[in-house]
Image 1 (cartoon, helix red, strand yellow):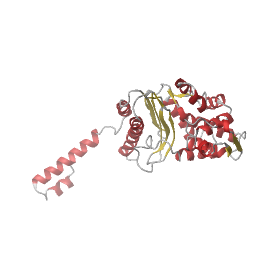
Image 2: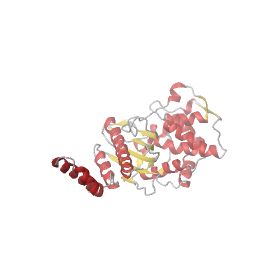
Image 3: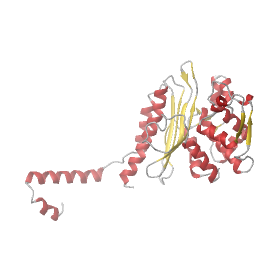
Image 4: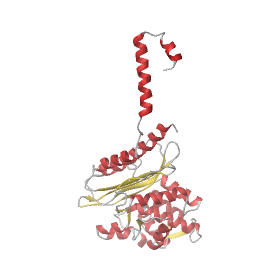
Length: 322
């Protein structure tokens, strides 16, 4: 305590002075000994705790891309998980890369034939509104695939991109090794349950892809902006990554969901870029697989992991006074 503060305290009764002195000492001690608001190991343990709500497999990874001292926090981060419609993100990126290269044009008309429409069991607003097919711009097909997770648009665009081989070559060119595209929506719907596992990703490799997107690698500025806009406007999965974040938080994301067969749901996923209050960007990928848990539990796990990561990095930044 300074001498000036001591002179001011003499004007108060002794008990009140003692209270002020005690509070000042406690605050000083707290400032000197305060632990990190959130350490990576704490977030990892919290992720594990949340994952226990399901009886299947959970893989999750998160990182703040703008931090110099960034640390990837993951649980089962190098394990393979079926992507389901998450694989529409790399397909969309590969299509837009072809646009950047001049092989495709956003304004070109694409004829979608009746035989191109995916089966009824798959989600396809395009098919529902156009049961005989129709003609659509490439831009509208990309929007349908990303913002509405349209299965017909996805299969048509995968063909226009050059097939799985070209998409995988694009991914490897970005340095993304643990994301693999091999087949179509139609094939996944008409084959046995194991077919969907051929389109797989690891959570940490999905972060690598999200990082490339955020940094603008592999796409022109215009193509990147268009894709992020569609991801921000994505309608499926409002209770997943977005579910427990503050209202209005920008979340550019892509979901993936399998059917439930004999009580088992093979994939409930969401991956994306979350803008934090200070403008930094957090990449998050959560895959919930091979579980009998109901939709509320599966989606709740994704939402809680995203919120835990949000709380970790926003509280850490507040603690540092930035």
